[in-house]
Amino acid sequence: MRGTPLEEVARVIEARMVGARAGRTVRGVCIDSRRAGPDELFFALRGRVDGAEYAGDALARGAVAVVAGRPVEGPTLVVGDPLDALQRLARWSIETWEPEPPVVVGITGSVGKTTTKDALAAILRTAGRHVTATGGNYNNEIGLPLTVLSANESSEVMVLEMGATHEGDIAHLCRIAPPQVGVLTAIAPVHLDTFGSIEGIARGKGELARSLPDDGVMVAPVGVPPAAIAEGRNLRRRITFGRGRQEGVDLWASEVREGPEGLGFRMHLGRRSVPVQSPVFGTHLVEPLLAASGGALALGLSLEECAAGLSRVKRTGLRGEVYRLRGDIVLYDDTYNASPAAMQAVLRYARAQAGEQGRRCVAVLGGMYELGLWAREYHREIGRLADELGFDLLVCVGDEARWYAEGFSGEAILCGDVEEAHRVLEDRLEDGDYVVVKGSRGVGLDALTRRLRESLAVV
Image 1: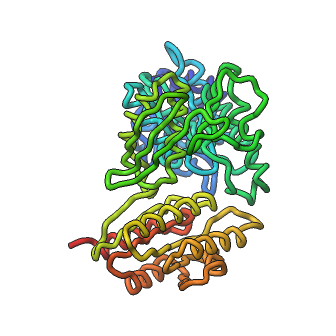
Image 2: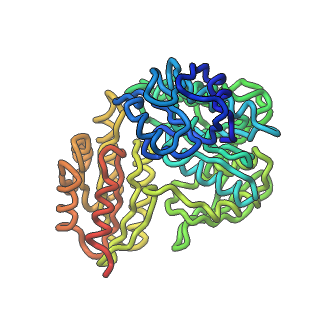
Image 3: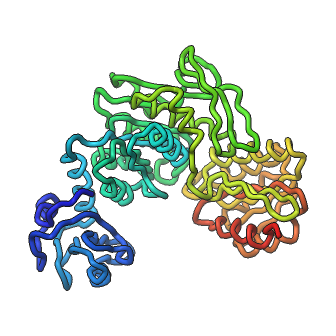
C-alpha cells in the first residue's frame, strides 16, 4: 500500500476519527494484532471474537490507528463495518493507482486455483513483470482485499485467486478488484451443501466472466457449462484449453510424461508448439499449467515465455509434495484440501506411479467436506475408484472417511483421528510402499504427513 494520510483513509472508508490525529501516514494494513507494525492500520474485524478487544495490542506494536465498529482506547477510525471498510480501501487503492493501475487477473474454479495462480505468477515474474499474487488461502472477502493492499507501487499485475461457497461471492470479489482477465480452472462438485448442484456451481463461477469488461479476456477449459463462462457475452477474446487436440480447443497438451525432474509435455497453440518441463509432480496438473499459460497469453506473453516460466514454478506446500522415507517408502503429500474431482485425479496419478515403479500402493484418505446431501455417495464413489485402480490398502481417517470403505472391497482400516492413523501406518507400511495422503484441510492430515516424515526419516 502506498503511503496515504490517515485523514484520507478516513474519508475513503467513511470513518469518524476518534482520538486520531491528522498527518499520520498509513503504509499498510493488518487484521492480526500480533502482526501489527509501524505505520499500519489494524482492522478490528468481528467474527468469533471482536477484534476491537485486541486494539491495545496492535497499538502497542506501533499501529497508526484502529478501524473498529466502536471507539477504543487509542486512535480509532469508527465505521459501521470494519470488513466493508477494508474492502472499500482496497477498491479505492486500485482505482487511484498511479500512474496506472495494475492489470487484475481473477482466477476461480472448483479445483486447481492455487496451482494455476502459482504457475501464472512464475511465468510473469520470469518474463520480468512485477507481480502481486494471492498468498496461502487468502482468496475470500478478507484475504483478497488484504492481498490488494499488500501490493507495492511497482506492481504491474495482480494475480488474485477467488474462492466461493455461495452464488454472489465471486461477483462481490470482482467489485473489490475488477478483473481484466478471468481464468476458470474447472467445474466440479465442491461446496454442494451451499451451491446445491453442479449448475449452481457453474453459475457461481461464471460470475467472473460476467464481471469482465467488454475488452476483457476469458480463459477456460473447453466444454464447461455455458453458465460458467457467460457464453454469449461478446468479450474481446476467449482462450480455451484442454488435454489433447479436440474440437474448440485453442491451447492444448500432448506427450504428457513424468520423470525424476517433474512433469513434461508439449504445449500447442494453433500450429505452434513448445516443450514444457516443470518441477511439479502429478500428471493431473497439466490442466492448471495450461490455464496459467492461457492467462499469460491473454496478457500478451509468448508461448516460449510461458514454457520458460513453467520451468520455475514453486508450488504452495501440501500440494503434490514427494518425500523419500526410510525403507525406500515414497510419500505423496496432497493434504491441502480435497474434493471428488481432485481426489479422483490424485488417486489415478498415485496408482499409475506405484505401478510404473513396481510398488505396493497405500491410500490414506480423510473425508471430503461441504458435499451436503451427496457426501456419502461421493465418498463411496472414491472408494469404488480406489478398488478399481487396485489399491492394496485403504486407511480412512475421520468420521466421513468411513464411507470410502463402503465402496472398497479390499482391506480398509478405519481410524478415528490422525494419531490412530499414524500408529496404524507405522505398523502396516512395508519397505518400498507408495503412500498417497489426501483429505479436506479440516481433517488435519498435514500433521500426519509431518509425523511420518519425522518417524520414518532416512537416517
